[in-house]
Image (cartoon, rainbow, N blue to C red):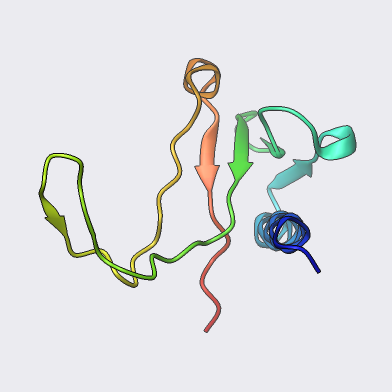
Length: 104
């Protein structure tokens, strides 16, 4: 299996895990876009409040080593979650980044 295939599968599994987590709340209706393309992976509607939320699901990636920034500062980040930024369009639309919960 290629590295790209593995990452694609990890992404799909992460989306399914988050969908499962969100459906545990009986007040939420969970929707997914057709074909999984676009800025949003999941949309929820809270039946009690009427609130819509849009999410971009990211797989959990953990840093394997520390690193030094371009300006020479050492970052002690080994073993920490890599936080993924939202695109400018996602920020404008209020899309939230969501990660699957850690497995126990």
